[in-house]
Amino acid sequence: MVDYRIDRRSGVATYVQIVQQTKQAIRLGMLAPGDKLPTAREVVEATAVNPNTVLKAYRELEREGLVEARRGLGTFVRRSLGAAPADSPLRAELEDWAARAREFGLEREDVAALFTAVIETHYPQQAAHPAPAHTPQGDPS
Image 1 (tube, rainbow, N blue to C red):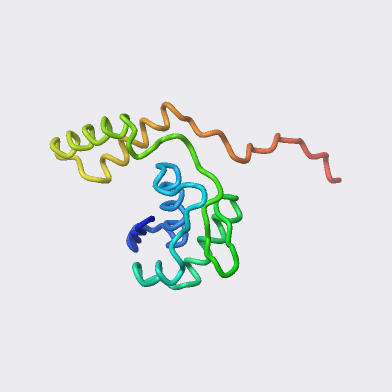
Image 2 (image 1 turned 135 degrees about the horizontal axis):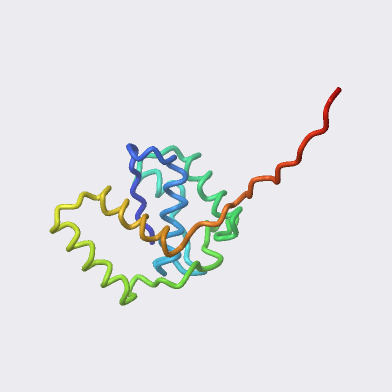
């Protein structure tokens, strides 16, 4: 089961936070295909968000093919993501690294910025929508 934590000061839309946290739980193996997501009511009670926000997040996950809604039964995980189980040896190394970063006095935002910089070095993002080729326009006269 996923335990949603909503950060209202993050600047990230609440439904996006729910989508991201669900994806992370799936990626880490905390949610597997066939597992049932909490009901919208359960999420609302735990987080005090609007029910429509939860439903919007679940619809987005369904649109991406990660979950499926079964009428009268709930919403279930359809497929897994990635290969980074929660008990991965790499996680233990990352835990140690994060503990050392904290000992060095780094704040959460510092760690996130440093980690993001390293990720960008090793996993450069490809442009989702490449810029269109420049085509010269003829003289309108």
